Image (cartoon, rainbow, N blue to C red):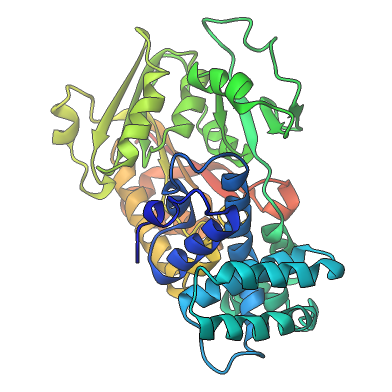
Length: 437
């Protein structure tokens, strides 16, 4: 397949065309949705980029429902290029009033002339004309997995996990996520907060604001972000740092730290005084981590990066940079199934497999056990995920407390966000303290 940038380099390429290209690339490759969006050409801006992103993510958000409808219409699985057109069109049909359906179908058939061969054009024309009726026949009560566009195995799992609440989770995941900005008190520019853009709406969570279309990213938000006075993040991200409660002058070890969002919270909680050592795997994310830490560093706050796997992290890695091997507090933001953020990362439900949750839990327990070795006597550690799975949250904690190293710790507090109840992303966070014995 041609690269995304090459395929979309022509000026005649529309946002719709681009969405089909990205959807085809997603169906036939192994890249995540955000990685594909990052591959859009730099000149692909404005309304074209906005339309592409909306259509591409919409095709994935409603793709399982469209596929369920297509099962009634197709004898065999369509090629990825043809299916991409059907998924994008299916999303448009679901979002539009009935009277607009013929225009959507006509547009898809016409644009497809540049994307598929003549035989496939005729095939698309026939299938698209039947698609609105097939989509309308899918009922939320009879087939909630298809209607809310989720894998059947995942819906069955959540029905056991959450009982009658599971339809609320499905509905939450299908809604469009809100983009939030967290504002931080400035130590150098006391006027930053007073110049709050009018298009930011206050929320029930202190320092978090909803970003509305009235805000200018270029003129109002980017200056705040570039100064380090703000960060784009969901309110769920406050849970783990608030449990850890870093204090001025403490030494903090931030594990699985990239891109650095929790370091922002911790640095401000420390009043810019102390030490943060951030650890993450070598790779592209390190550059973003360094960029974020650069806005936090001062003479009073030392921020250092170690490129390493947490499972192989050793005293030698710290000693090589003249750092301590034990810390007042440790933050472990563990890799997880991401089931708490499907609304925001809609392709998670395409990538997730039944075995993944247990595999994540096994890795998370190993990471927690390895991380605990860097906690000072009497110190504390917070384990956090963006998962809503019991297997990845409370069961990991229980497994840790029953382990050899875990017997030296006690569970002090915890916070769980179930998104349909909290109104923001799902997450789990647990505060453990070394018993000091």
